[in-house]
Amino acid sequence: PSPANFVKDTIGASDFWANKVRKEYKNNGKEGPAHVKFCDTMKAMILDLSAYLKEYHLSGLAWNPHGKDFSDAKVGEGSKPAAVAAPTKAAPAPAAASSGSAGIFAELKKKQTGDGSSAATGLKKVSRDQQTWRKEYKNPGGDIPKPTSAPAPKPAVEKFGAKKPLGPPKCEYQDRGCKWNVENQTKDTCEGGVCKVEVTDVKQQVYIYKCENVTIQIIGKCKSVILDSCTKCGVVFENVISACEVVNCKRVQVQATGACPSFSIDKTDGIVVHLSNEAISESSFVTSKSSEMNVSWPDDAGEIKEAPIPEQFMHKMVNGSVTSQVSDLYH
Image (tube, rainbow, N blue to C red; front, side, top):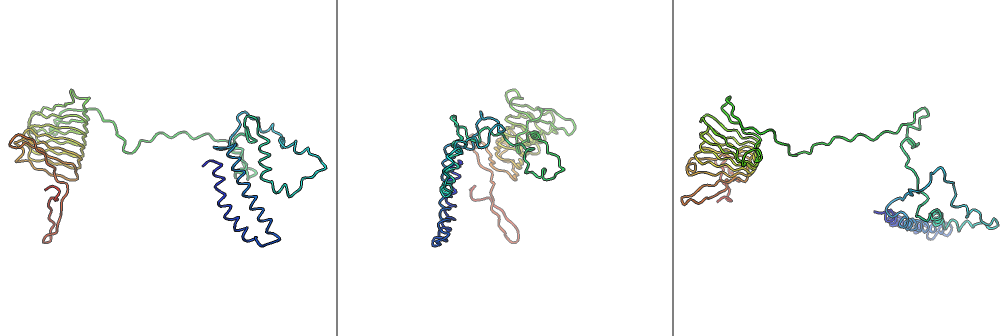
């Protein structure tokens, strides 16, 4: 809240305790009027302070940038005309007491200049080595603390989960292990967004790692195909002897134009497996910790059909053993 509203909000708490004081001293003829007068003066001071802040310090303490140095200011400079009053008349004490808060604000208004500068305008900030209330000054033999420079900014810390850049793209064959390594391929690193792998021996396997937005075309019959940590990729192969494995992938598609006896899907979110007429009858699926899995195949009329691979199962205890069946959602 603004300073004026912050001060004005204290009236509720002030009235709460002031009413208790009024109630206690209401019938006390000797001390009652003085306590009631104190409560009224307190409320008036809060209202006057709120009005003063609203007029001169609406959004915070205002400083005059054109003010003079504090050492050049004379104490009581703004109240000299009031001090040179007629000596014959003495101000009555009760009147001064009743208008204490009003007198304070009147003195502050006298120190206002034409450009809106206040009595506090131009004051400088007190640095750490000038703050005598600190414990360093309580020790007579202690040295005066020297101002310390601002700490050097810390290097930016990499946010958790931030995407790391891919390494250099690879598409090479290794004699050791008879394996093709296809790594870090994208649509920009391949001509037409298609990376072709030509397999020359059925003992060779193809390992595809961390590829994004690219299509991998495997030409020839191979031992196995492994798709690891890939995103938005498509893999097309002809014939696989062992299996096609998909691990830690997101939104990928796998198409078998020939035969593939087994598909293994693990920790994958979003996959579509396209089967050929040859692979429909002999392909099997093993899945774990995966979601949004679908399989498509052509029917007798040549139309493409698609069905989800179940993710939800119902388990029961039958004769001391656990039996499982697909949830009714897939029927």
